[in-house]
Amino acid sequence: MTLELRNITKRVGAETYIHGADLTLAERGFNVLLGTTLAGKTTLMQIMAGLEKPTSGEVWFKGRNITRVPVQKRNVAMVHQTFINYPNLSVFENIASPLRVARLARPEIAERVGRVGDLLQLGPLMKRRPGELSGGQQQRTALARALVKDADLVLLDEPLANLDFKLREELRDELPKLFADRNCTVVYATSEPGEALLLGGHTATLFEGRVTAFGETPTIYRRPHDLLTAEVFSDPPINLAQVEKRGGDIHFADDVSWPGTGVVRDIADGPYTLAIRPHHVSPNGDGPARVALEGRVLVAELSDSESVIHFAQGERTWISQSHGVHRLAIGNKARFFLDPSRCMFFDGRGKLAAAPEPDRERRPQSVGAGS
Image 1 (cartoon, rainbow, N blue to C red):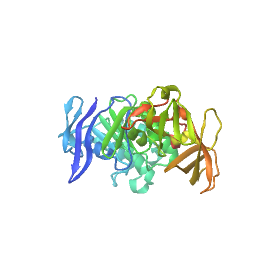
Image 2 (image 1 turned 135 degrees about the horizontal axis):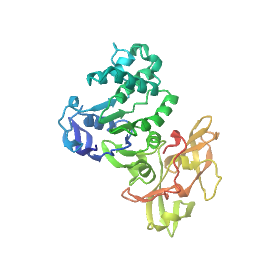
Image 3 (image 1 turned 90 degrees about the horizontal axis):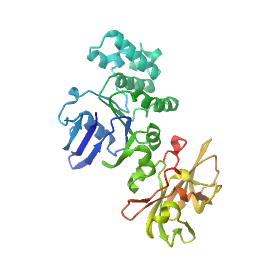
């Protein structure tokens, strides 16, 4: 039941929203569209659903060209970030509405609505109307209406954005399980790299209307084939620096260098862009083979369990993200330590030259460190 986009372009007036997108989604598991606001995620989803027609290119689904098939004739369910419900219907009737259109029997409707309502903690609210619900409860109702429908294509456009933290965490864990045994293609849009990692499956990274990469989520995260993809798949932003490999050593600055070991040993001498994610840069120098850097503290964001510190490193601003509370004075110089075994190197064309070996790169422990 593969959905395929073939050279999809979307233009509105003189502005191009989607640039020649080619994408063949996975049949099983989640397909995540990852990108910042205005990257093109919603536009691509609307084209997949049939709500928008591409300027050029084709949409194929289940071996059939459906580019010009209207949305009413597609078996598709979509949930937007902004909840949409029928104001005059109860929660039960809102969820049941696609099943009534499909003329399912009352007992089956009751069973399916009850099951998805329990999952989304809507059981006690079934007799209420949307106007009597909180924003989070209304979004759960819209999500339940999409889940209860046995659709061929399910499109989830940042559906958890308006939910409280606890429920968002629960649903991130439950949603993949809910669709695990369903015969449908699921597409999930998010601007959060950590959410993409937690959902797993496959991820397409988007930047300014272009698909920069698509593949198994851990692979795209650990070995982004170009620098742009690495930047998309990092929050806080990935740290970058111009370095040179010379005589087997990596020269970061005039007074900072270290031996190029592992996969880095095999790349040719010359200039590279080094990229390292913030959770591999710490004010704590414990551990072997740490490389010390000095920078001026610009911003310090402290919580009960985490410190995010922005500091000036050469002409760039770098970010350190670490466990624990590190109280550093704004404007003062401080030492930070990077783990050279976690560095990625990109050549002059922005293509990946070296990345940490897969068995050494661990997935972040928290969503905040998901980059």
